[in-house]
Length: 407
Image (cartoon, rainbow, N blue to C red):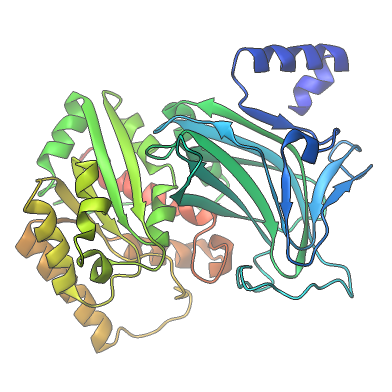
């Protein structure tokens, strides 16, 4: 954007931006030079006061800011299974001495290393919020930093809005926000660009993969739509939000992937197996491929078997089980595998083999990558448990390697 501004006059740039809006290429845009609340922005806080800063913006004008509480954008229209690029400038600093509001119960628990978050929430046609959302962390920065993210239209989504929130010891400033639709190739290129900034790693997958997903691989190679349900918890949701499907679709351009995040925070098979919940969370979507993922499965492999059997009693999707990934463990700290952990892995492998379920070992790749990177675990997380955008790139590249054509 800076190159454009340098190349044309302010009036020409305004005309170009107006034309872009008229063509529908920009869904939402704000430089905050006008009152954001009058334009539909809102501020929510228990203790803090909304702040519309003057002279402190990215280019010397206005911006929005907060030391406690969140700024949310107005809603804008989106389409299911379409990609969108979100761009904004941020400045996130530790709060000045003496400025420390009590942390409300609803505020995320976070250490100093996780200063702020950006989120996107989708809504249906009745403007009811969908459960599956998207959260990524924002880094500390003494100067203005340009952020680019990719988000995805959820199943049944019609609208979306975004929120920026500092954690308990930070203050955040946001400016020049825009949202525009992109295609899967642009989304895949965005993942590549983010990975280019990270330590390099050779992502590999087992040579005997795909044994239990022949129809999925046939459709990928020959063309068609694959409806995919990802069932699990917030880690499963983060994995779904990693734009991995854009990487896979780029490898198999004849196919179209529609990814549905069917999730509930802190929830695994032990909960999904009861009270016919499988109908709402899986069967009603009638997926071609079911992916079970997350860190909330516990060590109850009969619960996993129950979920698989309940699904197959009604429909017959191919199934992939993703091992737990991210979480609170630090791969840089060497700990021996105890009997319980070994039993977990043995139980998972046993059930997958007996039920004819494909498996992607996300955790081994995650641990190997974090250790090989030479970076602390907090470099890849937005809080004590969840991945940030850098961590999500590692997840997407792991799945890309699993689906990559065999040599």
